[in-house]
Length: 229
Image 1 (cartoon, helix red, strand yellow):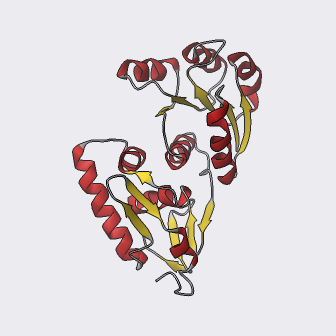
Image 2: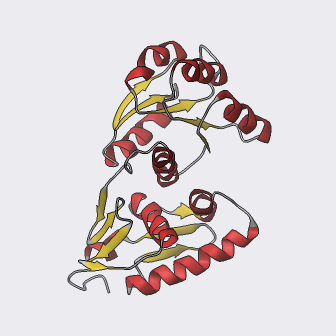
């Protein structure tokens, strides 16, 4: 899948492009609205920074939307409700606020592309002996089907995509339940507990106290031989 990344901050681009490449996405990066207007026709998805040097992102979004139905995800530091409303009205399909984790962004991309009838970003993902089939929504550990529910699968997918990095509770709640309401926090804990039970390796999904959760890559790599237990 071809992604057009419209981002002028070089500090952001390197890590973001690396994460997108790991998800087997083809990325073209441009740094201005003028370049974006000549490049979006060849893209399957546009990741659009709203603060560009030559034009406001809202105006660019309206121009793209007037000519194309290509999915657009706004990636921005603007947190205000008014900014979100303006972006949605300008035609974006989703809105991710900086700073964000790559796992959250990839989950948002998958959600948007599903709405447009496209296959998931990464049909099959592997972390050690952990294998996730996004098409079938099934996860396997050392060849054993874990029998996950849809939400458990989405939870494991977000953690696996981070490849050992911590994913915050807020990011997980936003990416899976699209909310940060208080009840979602307890729901997340219940799903983590259920996921750990089905994995059969409590240490595979680790708690980062006060922050969130991570997949212990070393545990995943030792699942088949038992060296991670």
